[in-house]
Length: 91
Image 1 (cartoon, rainbow, N blue to C red):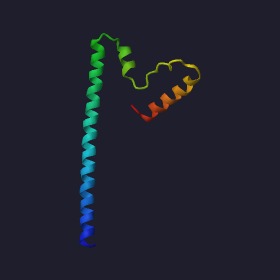
Image 2 (tube, rainbow, N blue to C red):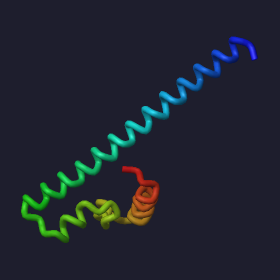
Image 3 (cartoon, one colour):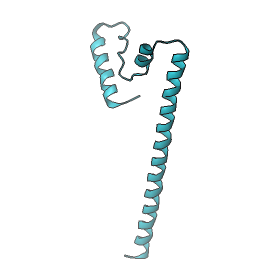
Image 4 (cartoon, one colour):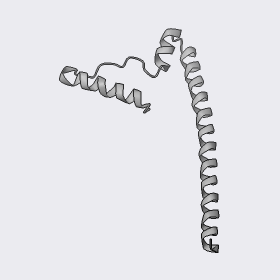
């Protein structure tokens, strides 16, 4: 291998390691932030006098959604769309 190829491999290795390290760090920070936010939201609901059942329903991701306003022909496709979003873990 020539010096140019070696330099390219080294630079790619540096880039890949920096990228992976930054992704790992961001994931750890994001998880910590989500956990803190969930705890804070639960505490806010408890302080507001919400019953424990209502707190769990509010914090549960797959809580039953309100029906689509107006209902009618679009109610079933709307429910299917929301179910698909929940399955895809889209916030």
